[in-house]
Image (tube, rainbow, N blue to C red):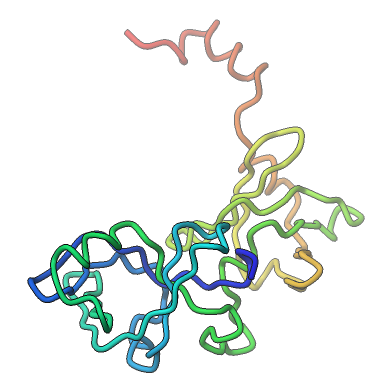
Length: 197
């Protein structure tokens, strides 16, 4: 499997208890689905296929915004310590189904964003998404990172297989959210507004 074939659910942090329990940071929007997952894989990294090891989940519980996992055969603090920092994953084909209006963030990463309002103008590729602000972070070739609202009002289509997002953006939106240019930075510096005391 390649890294795109895995859905990462959590990252193991440290032992939590004396009987092999492990505290993990949640990396999924569906922590309740651990109840349905008996077979999990542990990976050293998303891209290192050779490290994938299958484990059976005996039990789990949520704890202060994290999850505690207990795997079969991991029965001591030292057993749990040996798994520190590993990623907890499932095959991407086993991800929770989404409704028609939803998409996995990982499926957006790397997609080319096209602005149909500017005759099919490519903006750049999605580097990340800020879910709290609802912003796509798009790496534009000439202007660096651009922030684009990931809103239904602007969205025309998403094709995760073709790695393409089509949007119809309002005039001026890209200029407002573009990073400051070198000329603008020099102008601020000469006017004194960009200097610190």
